[in-house]
Length: 449
Image (cartoon, rainbow, N blue to C red; front, side, top):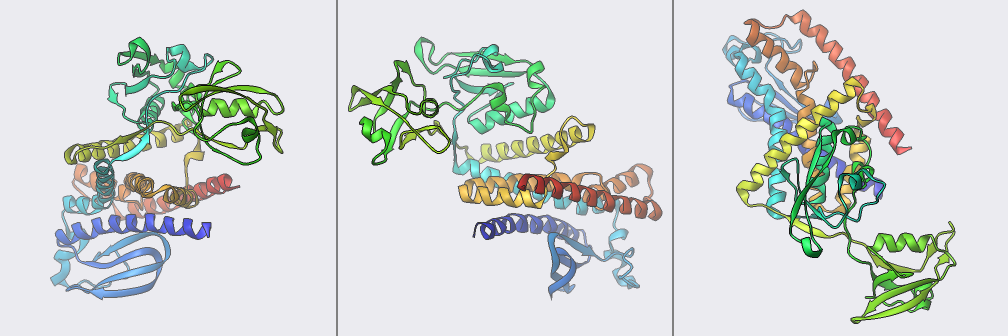
């Protein structure tokens, strides 16, 4: 059942993105007066088709479900046959170079437009995310050495406003890819300095060494702030019930030391199987001290059979219509540039080729985000749409970017690229794509196994 759910989530994510991409080509081609012979979802042999419209355009579903294409009236097509003189004005290669550029670029631009629309809609709706407030920082970490202590809320990184944990991580990732300082503007949330703002700098010497494939926040020593632990539920006949713990108890101290949050309390319990812990809790406004002896589980870790709240502080990130569109466009641009930078780093060997992912990983993430909720799923679709747009703009023959490269050379030289050069480049492009697909599937299987 889980596999079926994942496959459906993948199909519902990728299918519309392919349709939107090809519709971009189709609509601009029609606007430029080019005759469209076929609009296909999928590649290879056609398994279903119907013809519609004045031109009797064939709308088809093809055997291989990955990808799609729009087939124009094109004299270069060996299957086209002789073209009637009355239709030469609607033939693709008879269009001026700027129309051809517009038709080819319309596919990727449609994916970017969809991503902007989805993100703008999410920003207008409002997204609940963990806040950018920081947990207490260990002294051995780079964040502590830079001056971060914990409890503060990050309000900006390198001048870019931060409203949530995901935005904070995004800005840190940007700095890591660019190998620059990360300047954090922090707002104090406790004590006499509450509300005051100060700046700490994580130097480029630290940020530049981060492995973007790993959890960069944990590497720096940064973690989500969480409130003091509260007992949500006490399971019958467990160590917690025998000690007298009750649902609603707020854990204050453990063996006399303050407990900062639920994770710290759970870690302390796990490391103390069979040992007596003096736990001070607040119950109905009054302190109560209990003797708690964790039991050892099958792995030798301490358990008390009680559920402890450890959810982080949440904020709702929302914007008005115009601001939402601007933020959606900004996020789309930033994601596109980040993708290109990562591709560049993989080419130069600065980033691992394991970052190349294929349909198996995408399907897995589609299933995971769909289970989390509609907001996460739509965010996932937006990012995949951006990736699809960026990948298609790469100057690889066969892809849209390869055709745009030919037309750009035509603009510069005043004449089209020779058929012989195009044919050779197409073969090389197909070979490169097969190599990339093989690498992506290999990486997918490696993650799966």
